[in-house]
Length: 453
Image (cartoon, rainbow, N blue to C red; front, side, top):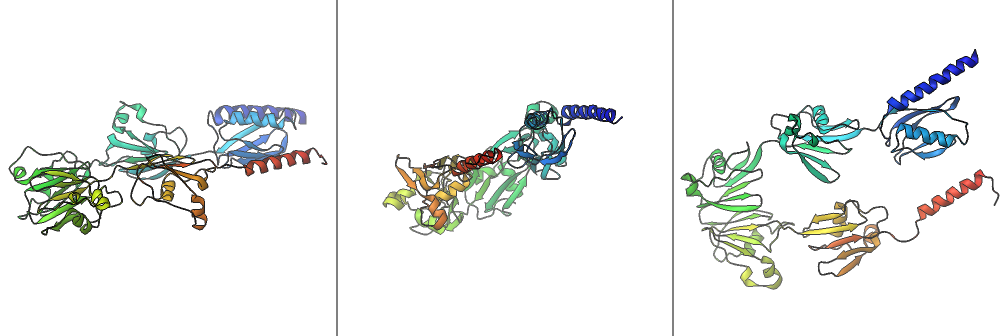
C-alpha cells in the first residue's frame, strides 16, 4: 500500500511539474528579485525558496551558485536537472514562480493620477495610461513623449486609440517615463501693455489676441514691438497692428512679446542675467549695456550679438573681438530705441570611451571636465581617470589626471573649450578581481579533491 501511495504521488508530482512548466511562466524570462520555490521529488531536504540576486544568480544545495536571470522556468529546470544528476539519479525537479519581476513606469503631465506604477512585463503604453486614471481634458494625446534610456520618442495616442497607428502603443520597458503634455500654450508679454505677465492660452490664438488679453498698449509704447519665437526675434509695427494689419503671427508655446517705451530706452534680451530695458545715455556703448545687464549667462554667445535699431535695421556684432583684441569697431555706440539680443550658443563638447553615456553635450563657459564626466554618467568600472585625454579642435592633446583631483585635490580639473573631445581610456594593468577569483576557485577544487599540495 505504501508503494502504491508513493507511486501515485510520483505521478501527481510529474503532472504538477509539467503543468507548472507549461502554464506557470510561459516564455517569461527570470529577472533579479524573482522568487522561486524549488522542490526535488523524494528529497524533502532540497526543497527551498530561492530569490534571484542582483547578479542574476540563485544558490541551491549541492550545486552552489548558478545563473538564472534570462532563463525561462523550463530552461532553469533542465539546468538544475543536469547539475543535480551528478549527485542524484534522474532527479525530478519542480519550480514554481512565486513572485516575479515588475516594470516601474512613471507617468507625468496631464493625467488624473500621475506617479510611478508597477506592471507585469508585456504591458503597453495604453495599459499604464489607464492605471493613471486616464488623460485630463487638457491633455494633448497627439504629442505624448516616451523617454527610454536617454532617448525620447513622440507618440500619437489619439491615433492609437482610434486604431490608426497601433504600432505607437509601444511595449513598455523598465524605467520608461511617459509625459502627456497639455494642449494649452504658455506665452509672456511685458513692457508697455496694461496687464503684462504670463498667459496660458488655447492653441491657435494670434499675436493680436494676446495684446487684447493684456489690455492693449500704454501711451508710452514705442513704434515697434519685439516678438521672440523659436529663438528668433521679429519686429512688428505697432500702428500697423492697431490698424488691423494682416501681420498676425500664430502664437507658439514659449513665445515672448516685448513692447518698449518710445525712444528713451535701450533694450537687451536673450542670454543675459538681467534682461530688460535700460535708460539710454549719451555715449552708451554695447559693452557697457552688457555690463549693466549683468553680462551674458553661461550659455550666452557674444560672438553673434544682434542689434536692432528703432527703424528695424539689424547688425551682427562680434563682441568677443572687442574684449579679446580691443577691436573698437565691435563695441558700437547705441541709440535710443536700440534692442540688443544675446543668442544662446550652439557650442558642444564630446565625451567618448569608458563612460556610461558617451555622446555630445552642450558647452558653457564654466564647463569643467568633472561636470562633463558627471553629465555623461561617470566612468565605467574600468575607466581610467588617471589618463583622461582632452583633444582640442586643432588636434592638440592634453592628458589629465582627474583621479588625483578627486582623491586629494592635487590633480587638474580644467575648463573645457567649445569643440573639445574627451576620451576616457580603459584602465591598464592586472585585473586583480579576476586573479583572486581564479585563485579562490582553484583552492575550492583542491579542497574538494582533498589534494595535499
